[in-house]
Length: 186
Picture (tube, rainbow, N blue to C red):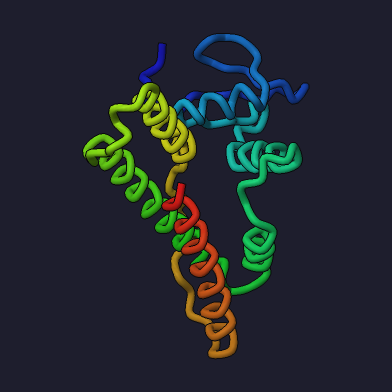
C-alpha cells in the first residue's frame, strides 16, 4: 500500500483503460474524480510512452461535469481562459488562478472555523446542529481538491499587450470577486 501523501498512480493502457496501481483494478473518470474529491492527488501516466496525462484527464473530468449541467465555471470565465491561451496573459493567468484559489481555500477555512464559534439564537432549534454540519460538509466538498497550479514565469511584453493583459486580468479579478461574494453569501 502506498503512502497516502503520495499521488495515486493511474496507468493508461493502449486500450485507453485506466488502471489503479494501488488496488490493481480498472477505474473510470468518475472514480478518479471521487479520489480527488476525497483529497487524494492523482497522477495519470501513459504506460507505453511514460507521458504524464494528468492535466488532460482532469480537463476531461471538468468538461464532463460541465456538459452534465453541473456548471461551476461561468461562460465569461471560460471565455477569458480561452482568450488567455492566445495572448501574453497566459504567463500571469496560472499564477493568478493559483493565488485566487489559495485565498478562497483560506477564506473557506475561516468560514468553517467561525461556523462553530459564532453563538446563534437558532442553536436551540431541533435539527440546527444537523443543518450546520450539512453546511460545513457542503463548503468542505466545494473546496476539496483545489490544488495550487504552477505556471511559467512572467514574461515582459510590449505596452499594448501589457495594457490588454491588465484589462483581462482586471476582468478576471472582478469575476473572482463576484464568485467570492456569492460564496460568502452562502
